[in-house]
Image (spheres, rainbow, N blue to C red):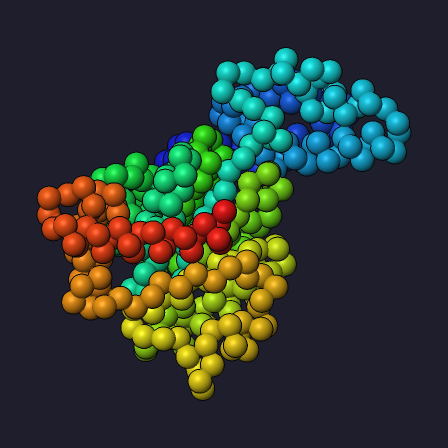
Length: 347
């Protein structure tokens, strides 16, 4: 595959990472970001924009951290301002850029290896809850097979095209474009819905590229949402959560566990989830547990099922003439209960 055949955002990120040593060396000698950018362009080493260059927040963070260490060691305040872009940082900014300290966003990653357990439903709930707070939200759908979140007309969903045109197989490098989208987005909340077929590639990508640490060190909060459900999938979803917790513990990942009772109560030898060994072993990484209760099948359950099948939001269903008065009332009741639970867990 040639350099030109790769999507531009992924190419820019890789170019940047390839030049990391040179960039850090220049910063350590006191060059500003603007000077380093100019040097890269003069040498034709980086084809992205200056805005993209600055948006690779972890590099910027490293520069600032390095400068602070040098400032503390040498008592030289000028070195700090030189390393991050001159005595007045705003002089080196272009339209649309901001200091990393001003970045305030949360990335919600909904992930579970078992298919059909409600990941897309939860992604939709989180998206709607954040929108109800007046937040700007960017939903991202990474499922190459069933792009459920992308099917909601009410959401301006960004779909990640993971399939390689030649092999028709998932190309993990295509996640690079998703990462650039996250850094560039002005949204306060970014919700990533990941399908079962892309579970392994996404988890490997997050792990091997140390993505959670990258985002956190860039001032971006990361919340991993995972699902535990009853029935035949209970063992698989419990194992999936345990694996995720162990894999990302060293990156100080934080989880919200969603208990989906659609197929019944989650129990093991008479113990509920919070009494199980898997919870006790991983309670240090769990920030909240949210229950999606089993609904009365002929009323609440049927209304919610129709709403989800039509890919409507709560508000769309409540305002739609496809639902009768009492059906709308039940949907409103479900919405209120779910949003109350998310308010406690998410703030």
